[in-house]
Structure formats: structure tokens, C-alpha cells
Image: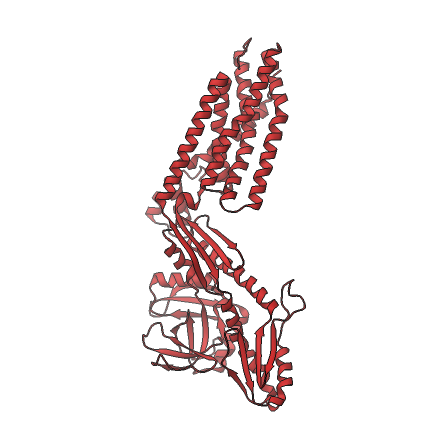
Length: 553
């Protein structure tokens, strides 16, 4: 006999109701999206009447999670960037010079004078006065080498030290270059992700592509140029000793120094030492603030080791100027008045409030270790995204209508039950997508359309099996019961194989392929649930109410 325990009926209808509730916000997408943005802004402190009004557009006790729309549906920006890893080699060589100089100074009796020579960007050339002291000089410099911190570089050191006459040549080893490339790209990836997250964009796609490239897709942003402004600024902050000031832009700075312009005073240039005292990488926090005159500024704080280095430098150089350099421009060059032990300070300049806020965001997210060169950029307008949504709606509605008509004409009342389950099925797909925070793309819509077609397969198997049992002179109750029992194994087998395919597509694919796999996989889960439980429960409830002597399927 057909039976459904009361607890099973409650559980099935509760699951259906939960799925419909989770899917409901997507029917009021713009209103709920504005509500969510306003609530987030209020939590951050922007408790304005406008935000309160927007937050009141949707009841707070209702679910408010939405299906995120992908780049092809919402519009946005697409960038393909290449990390210039060679920049890091030059930076490493510059920062190595003070350490090597300090190590060789106690050996002057043996090696003579120590002079930095003009060098290629990825080399460091140091001339010594006594060529007979070269073996000792090489020994001292090689002692500064450190092991490469990667599995592939086990046993190798980070620098190679050779000589050419009276010149010591220091370069990065091949193992260190490979490790540095890996670290640089990974660090750039994380910093790009942090910068975009700071802006608050929805569901960006940021992933490595190839050895030195990063793919960046951000839905909902105005243009590729706007996205480049967010992530393209290197925000390299350094604190360098000042050698001199000049108005001559052609002045030769000398070996180990560089000439940089002043940000606030056009025509003024500073000669600074290339090796910084501390860098922006040592910052642990940066916040917009105001100076003693009420002008916008940025306050910062160093980590413990950098605070100690900065404090030692200021204690030893009271009365000397030092430069705060941001992206190869001197923001300010104050004179050290006293020892600064706390590891905190403030950057002043001719900032607007917006500029100081943006600078704090960039410094807090971290400096890009190397320049990004944008190889490809595209802006996908919201109109094109809306066209994709409209096309997807039309395709889904046509498929939906065709399936509904076919099931009604083929199976009559039982077909109506299957159609109701199909509507519940699609709603539950959107409910699950909202629950897991998935991103819906155009291929994802294709997965939903495919699910609509596949969802009725299980019901077709059951109904055809019931027809066969009715031909065997079974009673209607027994025919319905055997129809579901005997079709169950075929339904499970067919859907498991398709689900395995969806899992493989998700694991091995990327981007659009994953979007298709997610909707296909979730659609299979909801299809099996609605076919085995929802449709069957509706048939049982109808049969208990009508008690027909005969049925037609």
C-alpha cells in the first residue's frame, strides 16, 4: 500500500519551503541588493537616513542571500596582467649592497678600498683596492649567502659570488631566481585580491594563468580603466637617506644613489640613497587621518623589527633629512629632530580626503613586489550582460514551456504533478545557489536549461513503469507503488553518472566550465529529490483523497 509517515511529509514540505524561501530574494534582485549594500554600509559606520531607507526595503527576518551574477551577465572589467619578475632581481641587488659593504669594512686592511661600480640591474659589482685580498673578500661575501627556502632549491644558496680581476660580481642563483619568481607572482596575486576586496566588489575572479600572468575579472565595476586604477598602482613606500637637493633634473646622482622628483614642489629633485632604511612591506597598519593643521594625512605603524631599525637610524642621524618616497616621488623630506622609537608616524602632503583614504587602502593591502603590465583589457557593459540575461530567460522559458506541455499531454494529471515538481526544482536550484554564494554565468544558465530537460527523466521512468504495471492487471495503488520501487535503481544510476561528470568538470575546469558544473550538479540533486519525494508525495496525497478504482497515466 502507498504510505508516507507523517514525519517524512513534514520533512519534505519543510525542505521545499526552505528552498523557496532561499530563492525568493532573487525575484526582487535590485531591492535586496540595495538592502544588503545598505546594511553593510551601516555596519561600517555609515548610518545615514538614505542607508536606513534602503535597508528597510527588505524585511530583516527574511533570507537576503542572492545568486551572484558573473561578468558575462552583470558586465564589468577583464584584465590579463603579467608580473615583471625581473624588477625583483634589481631590488634584491640594491638591498644587498649595504650588507656587503658593512661586511667588507672590517677587512679593509686586506681588501683595500670598497667601491660600488655601475652594474646591470640583476648584478652587483664591487671594486676592491687590493687584488691580493680577493680570496678573503670572496670568502666574506659568500658567507652572507642564505639557503634557498624551497623544496626544489634544497642545498642551493641564494647568491652566486664570482670575481673578474679586482671586481666582485654578485648575482642571484638560478634556484633563487625560480623561487623568487614563484614568490613574486603569488604575492602579487594576494595583494591584487586584497586591494579588490578592500573596494568591496562582488565575487571577483582572480587566478594565476601560466607562469607569470594573473587573470582578473570583476563584475559590476565601471570599466577596465577603473579596475587598473585600483590594482595598477604599486604604492611602493620607502624611507631613504637624503644625500642632497637640486633643481637640475639632469644631475648625475652617483653610484648607489638615485634622483627622484618632489611630489609637492615641481622642479625640485632629491638625490637619495638607493637602499632604503625601511620599506612599506614592514607596515602593519595604515589609516587616513589629519595632521596638526587639520590637513588630510596618512598615519602608519611598522612591525617590531622595522620599528627597531627605524628607531636606530633616527637616533644616529638627528639633524639629517630623510625622504618618504612613494612610487619614486618624494612625498616629504623632514629633518630628524629626535629619536623616534615607537615605529609609528604620519605621512603629510597635499592630499585630499579621498586621496589619503585611497593611499591608506593601498598601503594597508601591501605594495606590489613588481610592476604589472596589462596585456589584455576588456570592459563588458551592463547592456551586454542584460542581453545575456534576457537571452537566458527566453531559452529557459521556452524549454520550460515545452516540457510542461509535453508532460501534460503525455501523462495528464500525473504530468501536472511532474510539472509542479519541476517548478519547485528550479526554485530550489536558485535557493541552493544563493545559499552557497555561487556565481551564475551564461554557461550556468545553460546548465539550468539542461537540468529542466533532464529533471523530467525520472518522472518519465516512473510513469512508464506504472503504465506497465497497470497493463498487468494490478490495482492502482499497487501499480503506483511498484512503479516507484522498480524505477528507483535506474533513476539513481543515471543521475550518479551525470553527477560524477559534473564533479570532474568542476575539479578540472575553470571559469565558465565550473559555472556550468555547479548548476548541473545542484540541478541533479534537486531533480532526484523532487522526482523521488515531492512528486510521489503529491500522488499519494491525491490518491488518499480520491481513492480512484482505476487510473490513467
